[in-house]
Amino acid sequence: MKFNLSKEQRQLMVEDIQHFFLNERGEEISEFAAENFLEFFKNTLASHFYNHAVNDAITVLQTQYSSIEEEVRTLEHPIRR
Image 1 (cartoon, rainbow, N blue to C red):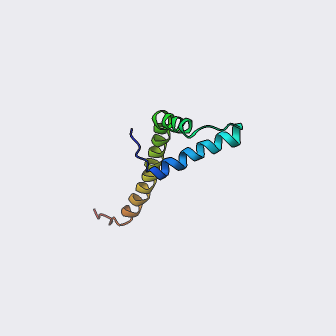
Image 2 (image 1 turned 90 degrees about the horizontal axis):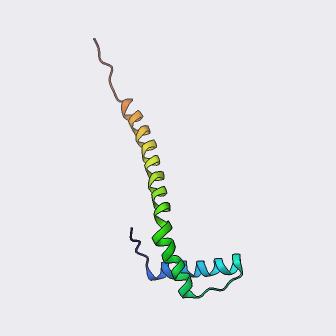
Image 3 (image 1 turned 90 degrees about the vertical axis):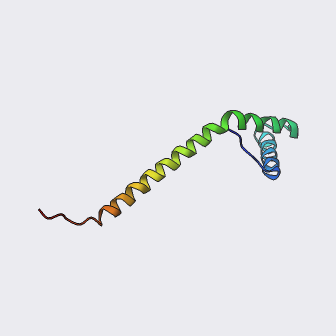
């Protein structure tokens, strides 16, 4: 799966990675190292998060569909026999 990030998005993510390492680990990492981490996450982990979001969207759609179906069924007319 290919993610197209704008230059600005990529730069913000690289800066976030650098801040994380500095704040959480007390390590300063270069922009190059942060870009390598970003590529690793994009290529290895992002699909897991993406697939989870897709499944969440499916759950929401199923719930909404069920609600819509109930509303439509209220429009049915009784059939006389």
